[in-house]
Image 1 (cartoon, rainbow over the protein chains, first blue to last red):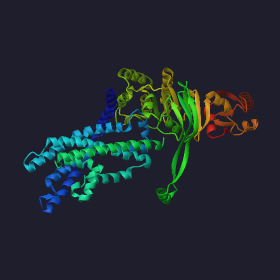
Image 2 (spheres, helix red, strand yellow):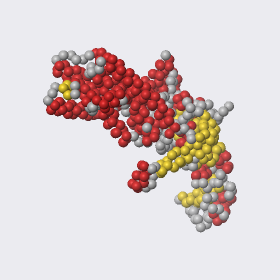
Image 3 (spheres, rainbow over the protein chains, first blue to last red):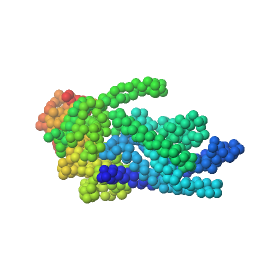
Image 4 (cartoon, rainbow over the protein chains, first blue to last red):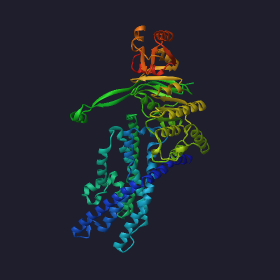
Length: 275
Length: 338
């Protein structure tokens, strides 16, 4: 018990600092948010054109209403589970300030995790309710009935937590690569695009050829946003939800183990540059 | 009892990719990097007893910072090991760093975007400093480092001198047994330097904190350190007290004569008179005065004065103490054989 208490006492200040940091750069956050929401609307119009020109009510099993929910909830999930710890680790390795973290008696990734949680708490509180409410109002207007299902919503939240943790450890692994590459800018661009595609953030995995979709469904990337979004939309049965969440936990453990492994080898390769 | 800091045969090699100049070289390095192993620290051993302030000096690129980074557990030595406070930094980093404080003059551990005060409250939790002790500690640090006037300002708005004081306070908050200071006075003005030196002295005297200090400002060394370790090109070239350094590497003295008619180097030819080389004696004109630096192993102070007095009209005479700086300059230039 006291160990748990000590753990939280050590790391909660990071959350507090992360929140304060977020507030200090609120204008930056707002600009970012507006840009992202505009991107979602562009996707909306693209899909609207696809649906309008297809001439039928449904496209690959999705109605336009499903598509709108998919787009905005994917945006939400993507945003909530996005972890830029990798970039921070990478930057700090490159400019050598990683040294200042190593002189503190804390676990590396826990500092990042709790600091990022602080960032997230502020941004979540600003966008979560408006987006979910907006999507539900849209659904109500379209269907003429309340489609919101509390159980799926709660399972969605749980799945989001797993998704965030997978994303976090995946990015920690990736960030530690800076120990070997010394620069992450180019690879980050590739990574973001590949992950966006593989996780279904650009095109729903259900739209892809069956063989490819099956493979992608099993990869960790689907766990990042596709799984929680499908749960939210009520596309999965309970047994399928159980199996998907099991898969999420599996990938979480894999990423966690991998990050530990990479860290152990990376620390021996560390050459703090400059100063 | 074992020394507080014990380093044995520390060695650190880095792999360096050699790029040939130009675009062709860059392309070549991309596909077939030409790697070279650079030895930054080569077989360094030393120890520091508890409560001592050790000055760690050497020219730029000598490997000082690399040694400090190995001692603080940031880098892993290629071979050799160090044990500080009975612990090997690389083995149990989290527990080890609990009892040390580190300041890198060129970096900061303060939270850049937050008010300075917030950094301290974060550190308080990380190091689990009890509330009571934290308050006492802050009062003490405020007193020696004068943080009061900027403790509510965001760190990014602090001046370099303020930031350095704040960083030193951050390193001392948890009352560490060992304090590592890597160039703590870099880029600071005389007043702040003095302030920081007296803080270091006070902490060392009152709490018996062992301090390792690297610096390029030899005044830091003369005012703070009982002992110095000098390294050059990764190797240890001197380890001993300041008086020993003076004794071993020649007593350089400086005499300043103010002359009635101004210096006339045709008359005052120290080199020819004492048959010395440029390394052993130098005479510089400074208005109507002449400043002579010379090695007392070659010519005595008495001889020097009597020659000058008998050659020109002297209005005033000033004898400066041995300048460590002169010895170290010579050492850096490798003029002293070891």
